[in-house]
Image 1 (spheres, rainbow, N blue to C red):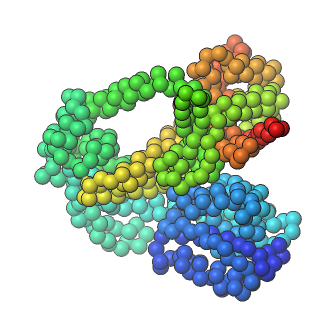
Image 2 (cartoon, one colour; image 1 turned 60 degrees about the vertical axis):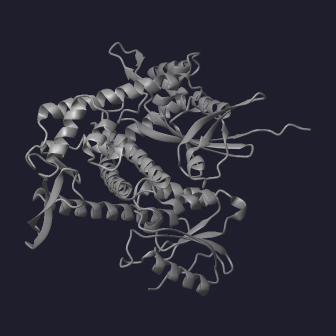
Image 3 (cartoon, rainbow, N blue to C red; image 1 turned 90 degrees about the horizontal axis):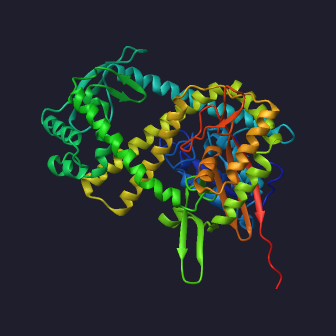
Length: 537
């Protein structure tokens, strides 16, 4: 295959990185090994110095989640002094198949001084280069979307015939069946899930105990259905026990005879809901008393992990700061602590002086109204992508759980399980919002915008800590932050419209949503940098 020569901006002797990715398996077209061989030969031919190779094996390009070397590359690119001149890719699809991810991360790398070159995508040099590149990214995303649709259609056809792949839930067993390929008429051996007579009594005992108020530990000691307590959390919400199969986005009513009667099922679901509410109630006072206004909203710019509020008290000084959770757990992120007061002051002042002023809100409203017209197709595409991400995480969680059950728990396995469960919880939350019908964005007049701006800024200046916290949660989606010496950099992603409703009287009344934004809101990002001045000696 004829590979495209380097651009004129990458002359002989230039230093380069390479990023390689495949979706898994050595037999696929252009596995990581084959990409690496081609790039090494390419560098030799064109006299480029390959100083580092980043690679993610068996990782999807539709998301950056789980692509650890990709995140390391992005973080390393911010160390401007050690950056090479360029980054080599086999093609742009290996970099990212999501248009938003591709645009954002390539812009970030270019801002940090890297020239990005694809060995196989023909990009002309000159003013039209970015336009052609964008068309290629759109094509890659569309190809990924169509492949996903085809795979899901094939899976749905098999599932509708009763066949289900993978390990059945506890209390069920695999039973051989024959399915028909609807396009070719070909017969194929598959399996369905049927109740297992040897375990049904224990399954019913577990549900009856849970309905009566028994704890998971008590149920585990009595039934020993699983090897660990974590497995019971999805066990009690699986609808297959009342005869309903949910698999791969397909729902089949009356898939099998119910194992649990409806009265017991409802009692268990009520119990689960009450337990969840109790936990939130117990945690809420701690949240309310916490000084950290941005808890749950701040992410580390280096690795993308959540940042947590950390308070250290000693006789000389009390230190309150946001710190990277990954740096604490895995010790592989070197992000610096960020002063709580400095970051919160920066975010609030940016909201008050730029984002929430009437002129900015009017301009944002115009963009949001225009975006909404074209947003429905993108929304459906995002929903399908999130559903696939959730299924991948569910398989990974099941694999880890089986490993714990068969070999016993270790700290590494438990950490991996907790991390995957947290990722799945975020995706499930996003999917719930994507299921809500889109409501029209209110087209507010300038006086209404001015009134809303004034009210929101007043709430941000409130002396009541919880009022300020709720207002921030209603406005901000996330804050991606990083400190480098005296320089503090943040990307504030916020919602439009802010948390208010237009009352029938024509006045504006607040309607805060601390746990997330209404689906019809759109997100916008504001970049802000703060420099502290060194005091003269």
